[in-house]
Length: 621
Image 1 (spheres, rainbow, N blue to C red):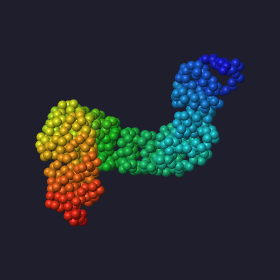
Image 2: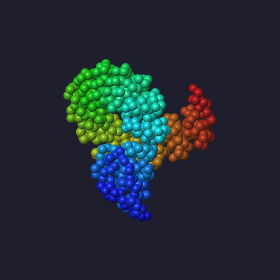
Image 3: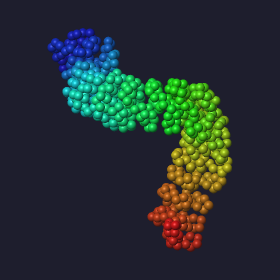
Image 4: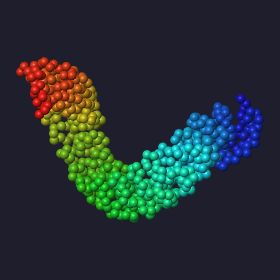
């Protein structure tokens, strides 16, 4: 191949191709940034084809280089190449050149392609960026009517294609363009002004709520074209909800002037509650000017101050208290503003101090359930609020159901809250419990392995027995429905707990799990080799299942230990006879299916056939 000569930056002579000087180019570009400071590769991307650019890349051209003057990339230059741009942008994109990158004035290659009317290249760039990216929508967002018209002429199918959010071209125009664009789409392109977005059922008037530049005018325009000011979307949001949510006050004001209903509700919340929950102070102030009564209603038994404590920041909260003078009393369950702030993860710490100092609510006040604000904050693992409550005098020694707050955290598997509380008050971990259990028993019964691990790290004796019935932590774990299997495995394999240890009542962890119907733990104890032949008052595990009508548990035991269903009871009766005596037809039929002896005799010489009338009587009485 003959050499290709391209001059470097600042040289107007771009060299020759195949040994000949090129024909004089008369190309004029609307983008002045294309004619300043271009490298050889940039010039090739603008004027030549893929073959030339590939050769330059092979010779070591820098794909990442940008012009010093305007920060224009190779992709920007390729985007303006009407003749070869499609193949070039695909090639450069395959090499990792950014499809979306900005020059010093914030323009991307797609802007260059549209300005230079390289619409085929622009369409390809859209596809490379995202197959669902619509070039017509892009022109509409730029409020570029002339480009939109050209694109529509070239690719008329684009106008009917919704974007990923279900918006069509008119909805996009309502969000970002001017009235002229909307008029063209309705009057010339033929989009139905009443069309709604796919998935959300929003009209153009909903989307005007996002349009800061032209929204005020567009509200009047779309209402004049017949759109209803209070039209609900699929979530029962009206246009004014959208405008207030986006804090587009000009649009909201015009909607109100055009009789938008201020009594509309979303999930039972009026507009004031809606805006407070979104922490939109400007919208809150506007609504207060329009209708103060909105601020004195209740939502689910809570005042607007309660909802602000849950979701808003200090500015919104202070304004409600100091300007709107809203009700700050506790709710019907005795929960104060501090109880609600306990759930506010984003702004709660600032609100706590303000509430305590300004509204003078007791930091240790209990609600009717017996919870203090500190307990509420611990339950939501809002440690920032916890720290502030401690600083302001929260009492860590308050009891709940006769137990301390660390037990509360452990029993609710709140590890981070437990760690925090232990750092604040390390004496809580040593307090005795009312029922004879240790804190490790509580963890085994209600929490996960991480909680158990942490307690051991803090020096808790995992092997200490219940002081009343001598149950081990493994007995407690057998009652743990959520995390029991993993805790049992941890205690047996890591801590070497005895699976067959009997407490003072003669109950093993296996029997405890069967009695509680904890299938996950039963399965795990079977796998770990616990003794399945244990009896309690002469009753084995399968017989216990019959008494409890726990067929699912019995099936787990049978899968691991098939012989259990054939074992005899204290009166020499087999499982089939016990099921017959108890009138349990489910177990009776299951035992028959699994071959339990129908001819066996109990201590009284009775067979199953002798007990069948008893079975029938129990079934039908």
